[in-house]
Image 1 (cartoon, helix red, strand yellow):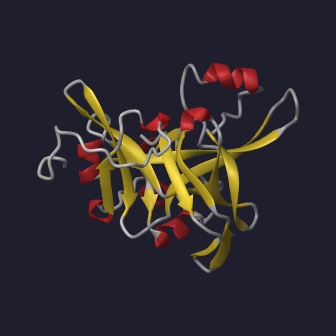
Image 2 (tube, rainbow, N blue to C red):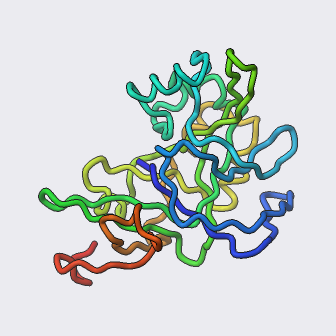
Length: 238
């Protein structure tokens, strides 16, 4: 799955998606858990392509207010949406055809289980300090207050070779899109087959790098710091 991510844009910069040039502000969030239900930077069309902060958790349209939303979290999570069922997913199917987005990230975290121990890893893309994760978004209205909130969910796919070794229990990974595929993902004219193909895309494992971090990295001042474990050697890590 993909529940913990990080981003670092050290200074204001421009990026290009297709023919569109966008300005991104500096931001540094080494680690954020989706279960904090906070905002996160995404790129989306409304109606022009632009970056914005959105609530991470694709909020179901049948949820009427914050109390119901809190209760729904005890039953299911919409932080991630599986690629294989993206077209029939009850929360995503109403917006997947016209409201797709790119979730910005510099790295994400996942756990490898060995016997009864779990070892967290930081995973990034080589030579890409910023990359795109496929997402889907909607606008939710709180029926009690009238407040509108843009929310999104991250799309996950089957793990590639590297991620199968790291996330070796559920064997999932975020759908990471290279620049050309990221531009295509935002095209509102995609048909079902094209949407499904992109949602299930697996980035080449040779483009990825990973290392282990502290087991309590989510409580650390520097969650991205590399920590080595005796159980791993350069020959057995992956």
